[in-house]
Amino acid sequence: MPRILTTCPTTGQEVPTGYRSADVDLETESGSWSFRCTVCEQVHAWTASEASVEAVSRPLVA
Image (tube, one colour):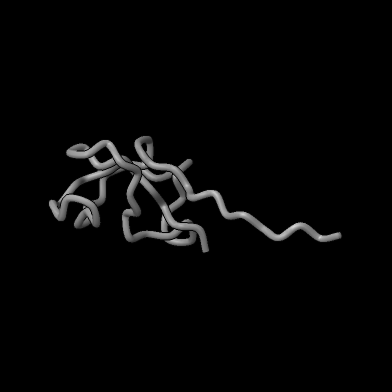
């Protein structure tokens, strides 16, 4: 299941929020969530408009 990512406001790096695409529908959700950042270890809040779903590569079928 693809992870939901957002940008760490401290470092500018893309980081996982701890949520997966089955947990949150980014097109219909409002409000904010928080998580402990794996890069800077601070707690950040994020909204659906600031997030993206991780691209998942799939093996090519010959």
